[in-house]
Image 1 (cartoon, rainbow, N blue to C red):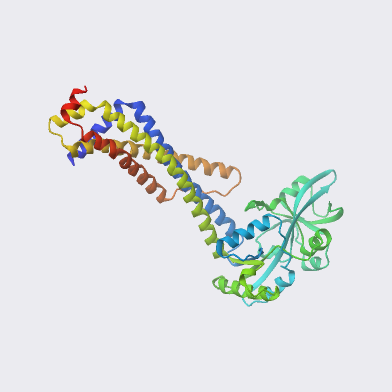
Image 2 (spheres, rainbow, N blue to C red):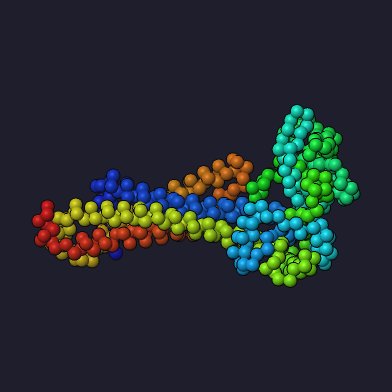
Length: 419
């Protein structure tokens, strides 16, 4: 124990005697460790942000969305589906009849279907490009959205293809400013649509800001504007969330029968429970964290190479000192311990500073995200500190052992002659 304490003291003296060299070595470790902390903190922040957005839809729902059929299995099939949709492939088989059939399931209390589009909306001399969201009248009961003024459209208006709209809060401000929008008419797709309501501010979710939307009855958007008879997705509310997986399986069977599908690989839809969404979220954030950590490892290796070079220089500069120590009784183990301790002390010192810097930068990242309206919670998981300290100490040993052994093998007589 005394030998270890003495080695540590000598390490601090050596570091103090070569401040610039020590500082540059420590800097490489600080950057690497701080990056580890930031990655873990950002991963936690992104996970909680997305989890909050998923939970904002409610934990008692299942979602059905269109999917491009694939002959491949697993992740490749999902990837191909996403790429096909991004490439403009249209799936037109999901219909309102599917919504009505799923509504009959014993564990489903209600549901809505939706389709999205874009168009220009105008009022007076103001023209705005707007996202159009056509939904069933039951949307307002399931989606947890609230009305700030006026009302939402009802089932009778949906069935009659009524020319009515409900505005998102941002779009209302863009078109009407502080004036009352309810009762006024906007021009949409070269026709007049009466504003019957304004939504309360809701914010963004998965890259979509619902405050910029115009809400229309589903059939109105389908028939009057888009000229289609299909939907993009459906959301169903469950009576018993514990039976979500069972209900999703029943929904798949009904949709396969409706769409005349016998092979699950040919499914042109995807039914997802909240539990499955969270599992996918875990997989995505976990893979992203591992990828970033792999990149950061490179910077830590660069810092480790700096330690290796510094320790080799240190051995060369202190050859006479090593020879003198060996001449007065220091053995191979003593010399290895001295230089290895010096290497570990440098990296641990850099690791501690890196943790502090990483925590501060992570807090700054969370603060900046919140200033942009994101519900980003600052947190650094315990494993981030553990991984950081393990990384720094491991690199200290890994890159310090070579120079330490080289110093210990020096012949004392030859070493003292190099003074």
